[in-house]
Length: 244
Image 1: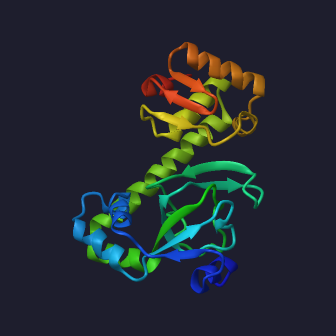
Image 2 (image 1 turned 120 degrees about the vertical axis):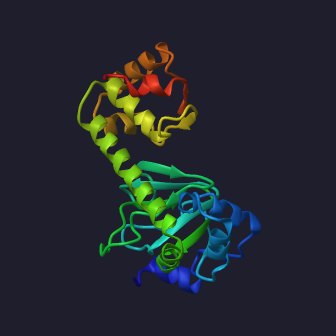
């Protein structure tokens, strides 16, 4: 693929290629590919010249729908957004990636010439890239890597099915509850909404007034606590069962 982004990566462009640090290697070792695998495998991958580190400035595209490369990206610092819509990052935010976050997994194999979304730096960010050729080598050396890869993709399929459920049916309260569960996969934690409330109401297919009522209802049931766009999930299991 010979698009603009590929040329930037290969020949410099606006993006800065950086020297890898020991701490970067520790972040790589913690991603899903290396679960249950000896440390020497992640160390070998990190030491490979094909595993590269780059820095992106705020607003700079990391991947676009047509300019991307078949590599798994691991966020080392900063924040990236997966965006559908405008190229300036002002479209609908599908996901956010912070330190340790991983993107590009679904685009590693297959013949499509388009990526699923735009990936844009929300602030200055450092990213480690693990290319397809290196992933193939890891799978050849350790079958557990392939199992981890398949398990990750299976999890994303379940996530998408859940998204379809709350996008296509149920009350505003049910749709919101299931959306919040998918943000952190049912963990008890605080999450930042990736959308404005107006965008979220459009995404869920409910009116803004209905969305506010749903937020209030979940708060009164002590399932969540909200401060602006920060939502603390108090009862993940209760949230999962809303509407069921």
